Image 1 (tube, rainbow, N blue to C red):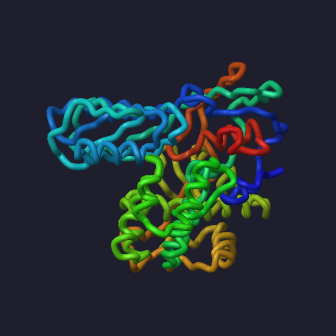
Image 2: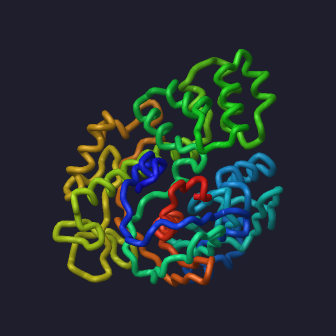
Image 3: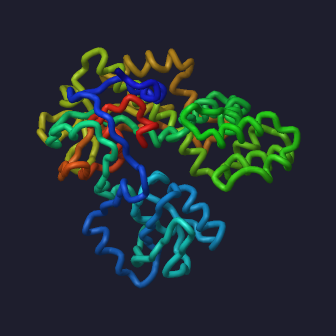
Length: 398
């Protein structure tokens, strides 16, 4: 049976046949290790005497966005990342200065450290990233882990953390912004309580919804509710929902729109699977990624991987997935043109492509430890979801 939370983020299928077993992940910070992998050529380029600083960000108990925001607030240094890493993990990732400026060899906070590795002539990009390596401990197992070999076919869904692990609303906020309903977006951000969230957080949101004085509520908010604090401070100035949304850091606003794209992609894969589309092998006229992640038309080459469109205002419609995308958008009461956002043009998205299936290497299971490497953009929790098939994913640490 597919858990309710999976359906809420657009996932309605398993593609492996192993039975559901009890087990938990992320029970402490050392249970979930993530390490970004760059190409050797990129790492060798860090030896310039000056330029864009490249740092290794090590963190635990804080997500990438909040770590970089804290560095900017404390030290005035703006750093960019190649991808977002969850708070509930021990992670290592590469971050860099987008501008050529003088910077310190190291920056530290309570839950992170960023050590400079060198300088590059041009900012590093996602093209320089090969993927991520994972080591994940599974606790409280009811049975032995299934005998996965690493060759199992798994669809490349966006994972739970893309939507907010304890309060899966990021895609709902994105949809509200796309619709131009900024009051609804604020309702999700400030007041929406989740059965998956802590009792303390839900009590705080009830207090926010009943607020008579923004100032009084702001003083009671915990450190983790920095976005809520920022919004309430802005609303206390002019009570304009659009200005409040604009006060959210640009990178985070873009993340909300991308989360809604991710939801639609998950729905597309689920619906195409329901209609028995072949999602693991490309066919004539399909768009594909080659072994270097370069897009092209189907050429019947073994290295090619099927690519599925990501919705945007100019997304590619000449594919066998357009039927499913149109059907989903009709249900969502939106059109591709809505992804050009007039009020926030900097948030507009054209569209794109994503692998239909997960490519994972160096897979191994050693008792309660699962190890593997994923290509850039794929989620370890989606692999673990197929291995465990948890009845309540968020209760199990997903």
